[in-house]
Image (tube, rainbow, N blue to C red; front, side, top):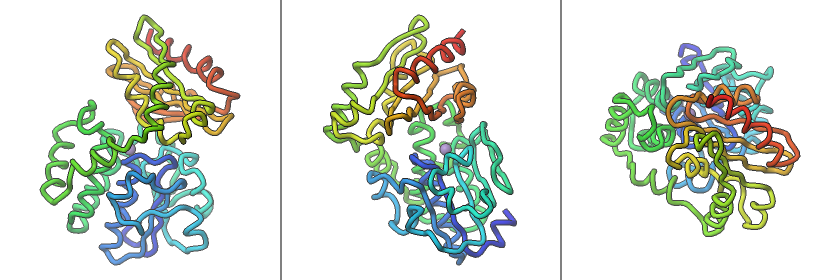
Amino acid sequence: MDRLGSAQRVLVIGHASPDGDAIGSVAGLVLILRKQGKKAVGCIADGVPWFYRSLLGEDLIRTPDQIEGAVFDTVVAVDSSDLARLGDAQALLRGGAPDIVLDHHRTNRGFGRLNYCDPDSPATALIVYEIAQALVPVDVELAQILLLGIATDTGFFKYGNSDHRVLEVATELVKRGASLQRIASAVLENKTPNGLKLLAKMLDTVTLAADGKLAYGWVSAAMLSETGCTQQEAEGFVGEVRALHGVEVALLFVESPPGEVHVSLRSKSHVDVSEIAVELGGGGHPRAAGCLLKVPGVREAVQEVVPIAIRALQ
Ligand SMILES: [Mn+2]
C-alpha cells in the first residue's frame, strides 16, 4: 500500500481473455488512483470485450499497442496468478516483472516485486473495494465497476464464495448507485445468433464419464469457423456442462487458434480443480480453474485431461 501511495504514474494490467473481475479490478484501481490525482491507465492484452463497454468509461482500459512508449513509475498486475496470464501486456513490464501484484488466486506464483494475494477473497474487485474505502469516496462510477467484478466472480451471488461479506459489500455498492440489472444484462444477455448455433454444436459433444460425475464438451476450431464465432462466444459454455444433475467436475475444451486448446475446469462441491490446472501448467480457484495446452487438437487435449479428472474424482 505504501508503494502505491508513492506512485505517480501507474499502469494497471489485467489478464488476457478478461472476465468481469479482471476488468472491474483494473478499471476500479485506475479510478481510485485518478481520484487521488495520480496519472493512471489500465491495460488488457485483448482489450475489453464489446459487451462490457457500456459499463465503464472508454479511457480506463487500453490495449498494449495503444500505450506503448508511455512512461510509468509503477506497474500493478491484478487478478492474474502468473506472468503468462498477462499475455502481450508483458511487453510493457520493466525488468520482466510488475512492481505490485494484487490477486485472489490460491495458485498465485508471487511474480511481482511486492505481492498481495488473499485467496479467501471471492474477487480481486473486493480487495480493490477495500483499498477504495481507505482512500477515496466510492461514487456511482466506481461502485458500478467494482460490483461488476464481484458479481461475475461469484456467479451473480450463487457460488460457494458468496458469503455475507460479499452480500454486504454488494448492498453498499447498490446503495451508492450501482445497478445489478445493468451488469446482469450486459454480461448474461449478450448472445448472438451465431453464438447460440455454436452452443448447440458444443452441447452435441457433451460426454459423461466416471459414473456421471464428470462431464465434458468441446469447441473445435472448425466449429468456430463454421459458425463464424470467436473463442469469446464460448465464454460461459462450461456452466452449461456443469449444470447437469449429478456432475461434480465439468470440462470445456476450446481450440483457438489451431494448435492451442484452452481448458476450463469447474467443480460443484469437493474436487479442487485448481490442482488439476496447476498440474497442466495453469491455475485458478478450487471450483473454477483453467489452463492452456499446446496440442494438435481437441482430441489430444481430451485424452490428456480426462484421465486426470477421473483420477481426481476417485
Ligand atoms: Mn478474479
